[in-house]
Length: 122
Image: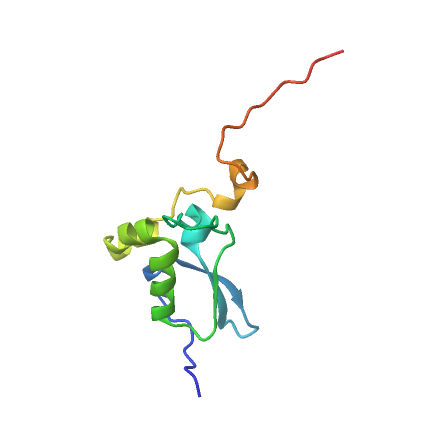
């Protein structure tokens, strides 16, 4: 039988997670990666494909090894900065950051500049 580990109190701050789903009894069923929500996945040097902008969701059973492995692979620079923070600094790490998915440029495929043109009036 596999591990039956419930979500542990404090792991949201310690591992940069946000509770996104609970059952009727209040137990955590799913948590989202706040690094994905706020910063997007980092580009991998030499990768053939562009990284997805999807937010990674961890589901029950929860494992700290899975969190760490994912963050190390998808957010290496930001995760490294985060690890150097105290618990209090980690709690405030994402404050003031706009959710990545709500940024206009994420909805365009290119990395070039966006040009806004005022329509001509008749």
